Length: 259
Image (cartoon, rainbow, N blue to C red; front, side, top):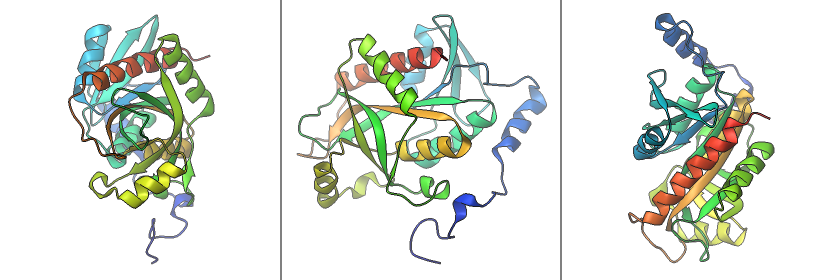
């Protein structure tokens, strides 16, 4: 074994023993018609209040099909899922995403918070991710070893367009995905910032890797909640909450249209 992830070389090409299809089969034992294939896609969120807020604004149907809070929302004549309450981090997001995909999900947008690596990004700013540094563990179990991973270009472009339709100022650029938010060092922050990385997050690289492995589309948008450069700790900033709500509305519009 080598001291790098994954410990077993070439793991990404090997079949796994557990299969997410087992979860779908378990759900269909009690609900034979259970499917998410008729949805435009699913939005992943990491703050439980975001599911409640979206459900309060749109006709919503709650489902207990995955290990999370899942609602189907009616939006402008289409149906989109929103899923949250499973906690932060790529491992939790990957587990739930696998279950969603097994039930038929083909497009996903992850809407979360991130920390700024730039002095010109502030709390409440929106950033659409166009690549992620793979400094977490999940992606290395799904794909060959590389430093970066990219989301679906088409879905990302559509997400940016939806945000601009809402007159939401948005930046676009790379993120640094890490599993260890209390081990982000000054050397990393300065180094990645100098390479043009805008934010640090905990989910994007893992979500993109699961999506690529399973052959579905994924995109990501962040609301800046704190800063690592010129350290500003997270606060209950109204701009961040409003930005998350705007991002969810943009994601709903993006996923509603399948064309």
